[in-house]
Amino acid sequence: MASDSSVEPTYLPSTVQGAVKILVTGPFGVGKTTLVGALSEIAPLRTEETMTTAGADVDDLTGRPQKTTTTVALDFGRITLNQHLALYLFGTPGQQRFWPLWEDLSCGALGAIALVDSRRIEESFDILGLLEEHRIPFAVAVNVFPDTPDYPDEELRAALDLLPEVPILACDVRDEDAARRLLIDFVDHLRSTALELP
Amino acid sequence: MRRGPVRPYVITGGRSRASRNVLEFESLVRTLPGAAVDRTALNREQQAILGLCRELLSIAEVAAHLGLPISVVKVLLGDLLDLGAVQVLPPVRQAEQVPLSLLEEVLVGLRQLR
Image (cartoon, rainbow over all chains, first blue to last red; front, side, top):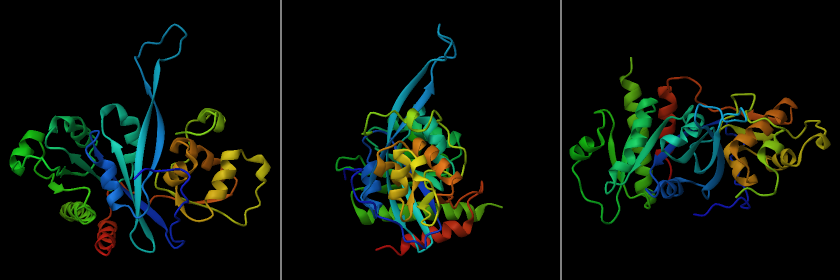
């Protein structure tokens, strides 16, 4: 699971002509990295992105705007879908303060899977709000931990204040088959939504 | 995580934004083998990119393997692209609305995985 920049690269087939991406987001410790790892054909990789966020609007005495620099870790994996097309999966923290990174990441993404831990759903409010606000197509996926309470979907939907068109999926992200079914269900949902558009 | 004492700002010659929007996280890169590029004009990181990308990799993978932030790799690749040293395949999805055919292709690909 640990990524290492000294790992030999696994190249894509030379016939590949381009890639698409899907984001995996959720609060800290919800299982993003595990899900990316379960789905990826290569050992998951990690990069660290430095992000500069503007501080207060008021300039300080030196005349420079105050800025803070944060480092955000990004775990990602890859699936070669056919000889021409590859899919990248980016696991990314969803909090509002990481929005500058999100802007870059979400540009061109097919959509996002928002992982939720139903034992602490309040940690997902921020992320779901961000996805809605920026009109990124998404599904909620409840990561099933051994002691996860079994809430009916409707109760969870109400608690998360989800729009009716957002599907709620469930998955044990450690299980490769379950993870793959989750991804298939998500893309199938994106496809059904696209079919309904005028 | 980042290796070496050089700050990203120095590596990129003071720039923090890449000049082209074809350079995204999932853009694919490969070194053009026949390109007549004066390698002495390149910095160490750019030479490392050319060495790494002898076959296709995404910008994100280049960043991870070289231990550099993606934003830095984008800037370095912008120069290499201008020099004609690399080929970049932009992301497949360019339109605001994702084409149905693309989603179907992804779905078929995923269902065929074992």
